[in-house]
Structures are given as C-alpha cells and as structure tokens.
Image (cartoon, rainbow, N blue to C red; front, side):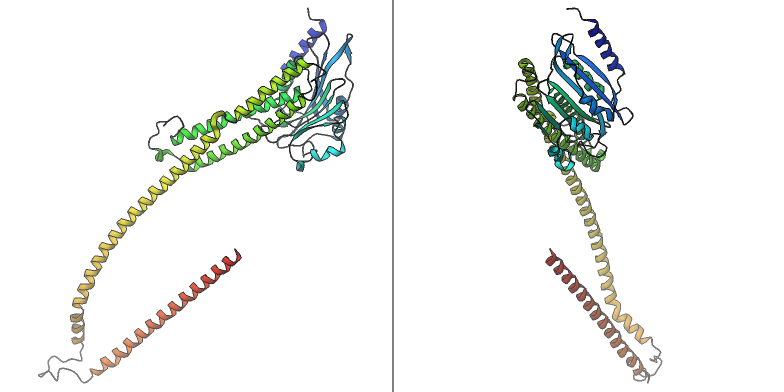
Length: 452
C-alpha cells in the first residue's frame, strides 16, 4: 500500500524534529515545556505525531484537551500525550523545591486531595496506581536517585484508550544519554505504532534507567580494575606488580574503594527500585486485556517486561562488583597491616640498637664510677691535708695539726646535715605532690565511669 501524502508529510516532519529538537540539558527558558502527541487510527501503520513547545501555564489545558476521535473516518485506536518539563537534578518529588508540577496539572491528571500526601517528600519515593473511576486510572512514579526513572504522573482513560502524562526530566549531567529528551521522544515515536499501550512510556523510562545502571556499573568496574592494578591482586591472578610498597598510595586507594562502594550502593538502590516498578507494571498488565483490547499488544508488552525483569535480576551479579570490592578492601587493609608491621619492626630494630648503645655507655659509666670510687679516698685525703691548718714543717707530728682544726668540723658537719635535710624535704614534697595528682586522676576516671 502506497503511503498517503499526509503520512509522507508526517514522516518529513518527524525527521525534521529529531534533527533540530533541543536536548533537555541545553539552557532554555524555565517556562518552556516540550509536548508530544501520538495518535494511532485504525488501518494506519504510522501514528499521527505532533511535537511543540508550550508555556508552563498552558500545559494543563493541552493535556486535558480533546484528542481527534477519528481521522478520515477511521476511529482512534490509541492516543498518547506527554509533557516534558525540567526539575532540579536533586528533586525527587512533584511538589519539591524547583519542581514544576502545578495544581492545574495535578487536577488534570487526577491527583485528588486524598493523594496529596504521596506528593510530599516526607511521603517517600514509590510507585502506584489509583483508580479514579471504572475507566480512569492515575499512575505515579517518583525518582529514588540519579540513576532512576525521572518523576512522572500519568493518567489513562480506558474507554478512549488515551494516556496523558507529565514527566519531570532532571537538569544536570547523567551517567549516560538515556534520559535525553530527544532520545526519549525518538523512542516513543518509533515504538508507539507497535506498542500502542498505556504502559509504553513508563516502560521506555525504566529501560533507560536500566541502561543508566549498566553504564554506572561499568564505571565502577573500571574503577575497581584500576584499584586491582594498583594492588597487584585480581581474581584471575597476579598482574605482575613489583615493588608494590614503593608505588602504592594506600590512603588514595582507601578513598577510591570508598567512592566505589558509594557508587555500588546507588546501583543497588536503583536496581531494587526499578525491579519493584517492573513487577508493578507486570501486575498492572495482567489486570485487563491490555491497551484497548489488543491481546497481541499486551503479549508484546509482557515479553518486554519479562525480559527487562530478567535483565535486572542478572545485573545484580554483573561484573561481580561486591565480591571484587570486598576482596580489594581486604587486600588494602592487609597491606596497611603489613606496612605497620614493617614500620614496627624497623622501630624495634632502632630501639634495639639504641639499647645496645645505651648499654655500652652504661658500661663505660660504670668503669668511670669504679675509678672515681677507687681514687675518692685518696682525693679526699689530698684535699684535707692541703688545708693550711696543717703545718707540715713542724718538728713533731703532734705539732702538725693547728689549734684551729676544729673549725673545719664545726662547719662541715652542720652543712652536711643541712644539705641532706633539704634534699629529704624536697623529695618528700615531690612524692606528696605526685600522690595528689594520681589521686585526682583516679577520682576523675571514676566519675567518667559512673557517667558511662
């Protein structure tokens, strides 16, 4: 069947928009919101697609507007309207600071007052579905971290099979390009004809989150490889490291292993949250015939979700990040222990040499002390006999001692008693002072123990 002129014009417009559509990371006016509309009609293979820019105040009216129910007499099969706004990178919830979820948008998407608690940060991240009526349901998905799905509110009308959604794309650098606006829109345009289902948009976002996780896992794996190369130990054998101690900066390695473990924690959170959301979509898919009664579309969506679920389960073991990080952390701490042991051995060796030198000096001092003790009596006697009190020229020995010899003893004995007494008092005072300090320290220690 030859494509119609309208289909050709739609295809040309699609290619033009994909080339010139700006990404979400570019600087744009805060009020600018990108909108996308896809409508698939019976007996048509290509959906009618519209993209454009709206002011923030016009988004609610556009989301709640009427979708053309038929085209050239062909009824509408499925419709999708999505508005892509921007939120701060650290914004996780619809009404958080810098978020752009207005009351009008929440009203159009069916967020009622009894659901407002789920829009507050203290409500915690999560996902869920709330049936407004028998034919209208609202979905909410919040973001848990930078690797996870952008926050999104979505409403589906089962009678008309029209889905409308508002997605808040965080502004900032992402691990990869999975959440670029042009990439998301391109994916929606290329897949809507084959998967005209209400869960297509969250599925695309969850697949993007999974790609982010894989990219971040590879980044952590490369960081672990650098650590393994530095330590010289890996699970598949030695890397030929020589003189490890001479080229290792263990402090830097500890910082790197800590940063890697932080990244692994973010990966585990994103994996767990994404897996919970995929399980939620699988359960939601089983509640009805899937997208306007098309069982084949439901089957295709189920296959994609099951594949994504298995992929997430396998990613828990991808790259063996946890085991490798545990092994490298053990290696690093063992190296630190070995370095400390070598340092202690070196200190002990130096202490041994100092002790030997001190022993040699002590032996020399003992010899000097022995010699001093040996010659001390003779020295004392020489000094004593050199006193002028003695007259060695006297004719007799009894006349040698002068009549003033008693003065020597009168001065020497009291002076010796005074010096010894002063030393004794000083030693007693110092001992008493040390005992008081020890007693005070014990009292402080007992008070601290009582406080504990």
